[in-house]
Each structure stands twice: as C-alpha cells, then as structure tokens.
Length: 77
Image 1 (cartoon, rainbow, N blue to C red):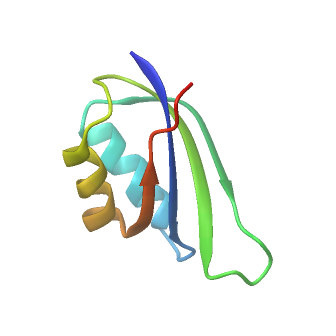
Image 2 (image 1 turned 45 degrees about the vertical axis):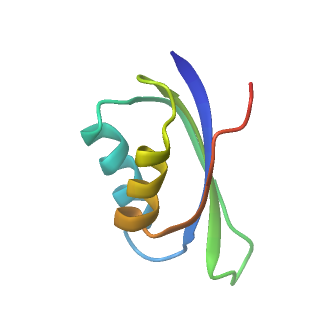
C-alpha cells in the first residue's frame, strides 16, 4: 500500500535522518521525500510517500516521540 505522510519537525542537525531511519526500521519503503523550511525558521515541513503497512496511530505516535515531530498527518490521496 502506498500513501502520503506529512510532518513538522524541528530544524536541527540530524532531524531528517532520524525520521527516515525510524521509517526504515518500521519496514516502510520511501518512494519520495521532500523537506522544506523557510530561511531562519525553527521548524521544517517534511512530505513523504511511503510503501508498506497502512498508516496507524501507533506509527504516528512513535514518529512524534522518537523523531520529535510536532505534527503528523496522513492526507488522503
């Protein structure tokens, strides 16, 4: 199953690596990843297209706790 995931994380060194590492450890494949941040902004928006088990609240909670995401969404395709 392929689906989208959007999240907001702090713009710190290694934050994107933490997100992608967690996604990989949970068995999801990343087909597309984009990270955007405004100049000087403390947060960045990350959009992912993933292949794997469907989105779940436990996965979203783990991304918030372990990767420091403040917002996790699974928008409809």
